[in-house]
Amino acid sequence: MMRSVLSRFNPRSAMMLLGKPVMLPSASVFNFPVMGKIPSNTFTGSVMHMSNLHTKGDQELYSFLTEEIATEKKTMKASPVPKSIDGFEVVIEESELTLTKKFNNEVVEISLNVNHTVDSDNAEEVRPGDEAAGAEMRSRPNFEVDIRKGNQILSFSCSYIRGPPSDSQEDYSDAFLIDEIALYEGEWNDKVYAVAGDILDGYLYDLFMNLLEERGISNEFVDKLSEYCTDYEHQLYVGLLSRLQTFVGQK
Image 1 (cartoon, rainbow, N blue to C red):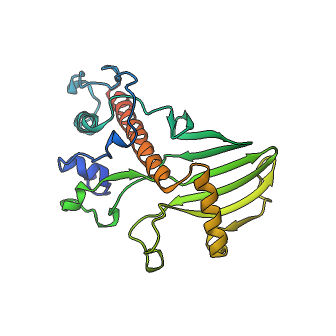
Image 2: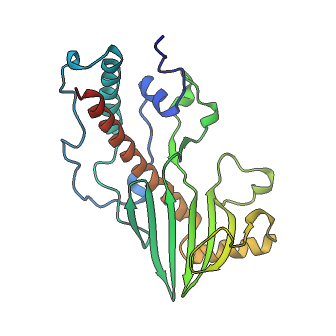
């Protein structure tokens, strides 16, 4: 028996099936420079005769991908993502991003991966047919911050805060958390001691947050980083759909 496309629910796919495009954040936050439009031949059009495909399932998948790509392209940014964010130079290697800047005698490096980072602000409530299907989809990747001084590296493992704040967080507006801290020399290995952020003295934790903010990793910056990752992940998603369509359409 053919499996229904809704048998495994995916918020982004459900939005497309319901005719509700994914809502991406405004580009005004970045003031993106125009770096050239994506060529019209970047994505495979529906140019093959359906009768040439192998099976009925292939035909249905190819047809769905055609509609999905057209819908997603309507909300995709027309230009590539910028090469810098707030003074951090961005190097992209497929799903991995590395952001680097100099601060006095230090090198500050942020590393992350956009795979499996997209969800909606109320993902747990999204169901097919619900109004929540119009929820905004955002990429909120965990990220590592390495502050290098010579051969020493002060490393922070950080993550975005999701959902409404708890009672203990009501007086704070942090957009991210420090999950782990380590200080080591040379290359990281499993023997390096690391301490969890949630067991640190509260005042010491705040001092570390101030240290990061002074080096550009503030609440405002990580919000911009989330928007940047959202736009870039969306481009990767549309590119994957296009390659899938080409694969399915091959004889």
